Amino acid sequence: MNRRHFTRSIAGAALSTALPGTTLSAANSAQVAPPFKFSVMLWTVFPDLPFEQRLEKVAEAGYPSVELVKEFEKWSDENFRRFNAKKRALGITFDATAGVWKGIADPAAREAFLSDLNKMLITADKLECPAIIVLSGDRVPGLSHDQQHQSCIETLKRGADVAARRNVTLLLENIDPEENPKYYLTSVAEGFEIVRAVNHPRVKFLYDFYHEQIAEGNLIGKLEKNIDEVGLIHVADVPGRHEPGTGEINYSNIYRKLAELNYSRYVAMEFMPSGEPVATLRAARETAMRSAAK
Image 1 (cartoon, one colour):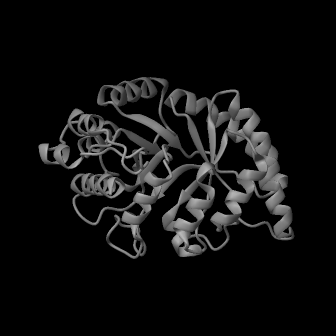
Image 2: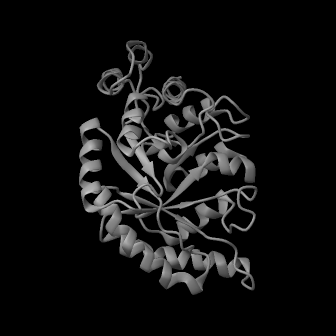
C-alpha cells in the first residue's frame, strides 16, 4: 500500500468532530488522515485573549496540540494546575516549548546553557511537554565556523544526556539571516549534520520551512535526505509569514512528500493569519489533510 494513502477515515472524522467548533463539512472533507499530527505555535494567534480562551480557539479550529514560548514564564503552581486541566478538558497537549535562551554555538556558554536547560526541564515537566526547542545563538566573534559547529555538537551531547533522564527531546532550530543576521545556524543542511554527529535519540531537528526558504531553499530535497532526523516541522509562507497559499512555498507538494515519507511527528502552524484566525487555521489544517491524501 502506498504510504501516502493511509486510509484512516474514521480517525480523520473523529479528529474533526471531536473538537468544538468543527463543522460537518470539515469532517466530510477529512476522508484520509495523514500520518503526521497538527499543532499551533501559540505566539502567532490570539495574543490579546486570556490563556484559556486561546486554547479554546485552537480547539475550535480543530487542532489537538499547542506549542509555547513565554506564555508560562510568570505562572504560579496554581496556574500550571489550572491550565493543564483546561488543556486536558479540551483534548489538547503541549507538544513542544521554547524557553532555553542560551545558545549552543559558544563553548564558553556551555555550562550556562546546561543550567538553563535543567531549569527548563522542570518547567517542561510541569507543562507535561515532551520536547524543548533549543537555539544555536548568535555567531561568536573570534571563533571559527568549525569551532562553533563543534560546540553545537558537544553542547547538544551534554544536553541530550540531561534531557534523556526526563524523557524530553531537544529540537535544534534554524533561523534565516534576514530575521537575525547574527544567528549562527541559518543552514538546515548544517543543522542535520550537527544532529547526526550528536547521534542521540533525544536530539532531533526542527525543520522550519519559512526560515529555510529565505535562507537557502531546496526544501523538499533536504526533507527527503534527512527525514529520520526531523523531530518537528514549522509552517509559514514566504514572504510575510502568513498561511500557506499566500506566498511562494508549494505546501501541497510538501504535505504530499511528508505523507509519502511516512513522517509521523508534528507539523506546527507558525504563521500570522491574514484573515479571521480560527477560520484560517481550520482551512490550513484541512488543506494539509487533503494534500497529504493525494
